[in-house]
Image (tube, rainbow over all chains, first blue to last red; front, side, top):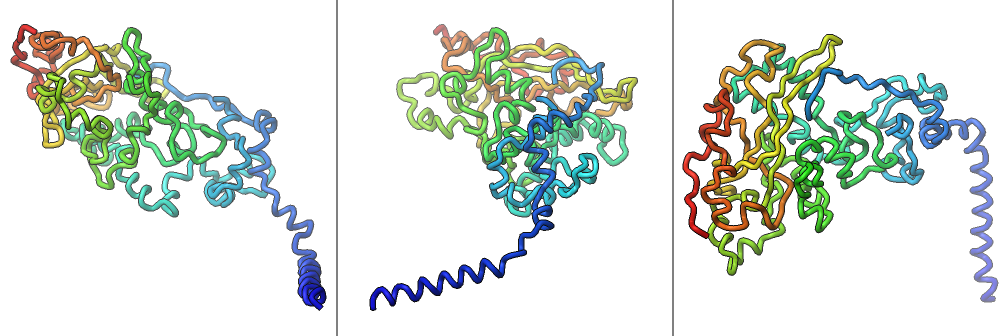
Length: 69
Length: 360
């Protein structure tokens, strides 16, 4: 009897989990996966890519400046 | 710092942090779905911290907005006190915009990246650092005088004992004062949160027994008079626009000097009669490129300023004995030390009567 009492809620929980899993199918589809990609993060965490794409900006400082600042 | 390194988010953990989890576009604009670099960067906001931080950090952001780091009011008030006209469109306002405005800083330029003045670039991935980097933030801007003094980078002059003996960082002494006091002010010394020696060395004031120098001088000499050594003084800064249209400046070689003068900020908080004074780079012709006589009241403000050099030593040449200082004209700012065109400006701070020798 005790085993039966414990089995009932377990079965209910399992059924619920399966049901939730089924109902969520399609929430994350191919289109959404594309949306989750973030080109900012993809690029700015990729050291090699940054090294390839980075543009060295010319420092615009007057050559006539002298002395300490 | 390499160009790529400036924008490298090297620590993926940042993306899980509070700031990282809000996404890039909310702060930086641009288009996160666009894979072509130039298109992704359209309407990019490189430093979003200039105004956006108050959404979550209202108190500190509001205080910062009134601080010297944000307003540069110390520059403005110094120019205006000399009779300078900073009204919109004036010659001096143009000079200030061209030469002074770059010293403004934002939240991000202390807590995330290096200052724009040094070319920017993330300090540590994209980490938001509660404590700014001493090397890449504080000294990046304050390196020529304070930073060099503190680290002992002036040949022949020792580093500060707080660095050599305790490796203390700037923020160990300077904390909330860096965000201002919440009120507009003209000087860092107006800030009630300004760092003070007694914050750590209270015992010096509460127990002078056995230290005759402290017994005698705690109320009339600032700590620096006895415990700092020669520091950098700058002269003759002139600003202009070069033939290429770029802002430029020239200045005379700096000089390592130690000058005790009369206290220009004497108050209940700073009751000292004598303090050390530092010469600021300003001269009457600093902005002559922009017009004649832009400082009609130049002599109203001294060019030797209240100073707090960051090269503290326990033992210094002037505290070896009483007469190492008393009667020693080399240590005091006297009429002979002042440039002829600045004599009137400094009448209130020069020492006319040296302390008499005491034979000890």
